[in-house]
Image (tube, rainbow, N blue to C red; front, side):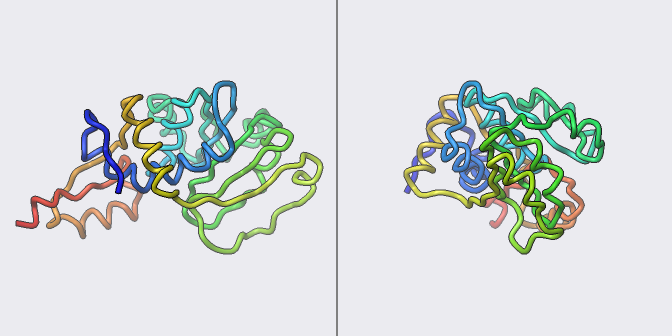
Length: 208
């Protein structure tokens, strides 16, 4: 059992128990704090929480995205920089920078462009995609930079409570859209089109 701190809106707190802890756990495991450089791949339910939490921990946050239209929202959430992953020159300019990259993309995609952006001994951690990597990873930048690729999923009760307490102290909640249960099929179709910022929350009172 966990306790939601007073003052946190329950609607915005609900996704903290999934997207919040999923992104908090790697931030804590890799000891992100003041002076850390963190990049987030993808701006969705997980990505927006990763930006908020990393920024609140004192990190300098960069968003990697394929969508130029997401820059304003990324900066509102706490990102200091936005890099178009489709722009090879922008990607080259970020070489050897990041202590940690949190990859939130939920489908198979090429990780190779992100590995060279890691600093010495940096880690890219997957929290969104479950499955085989395609294409294969080029091991050269991994070996030469003592870099790592890892995975992480949610966290235990104690860590979840730590995350909730931190969010309470910093006024952090998820950006949500509250829907009635009757609208769930429509919400599902919107989700498939990435048409939500950034989590749907069902109003259980609508079950009546």
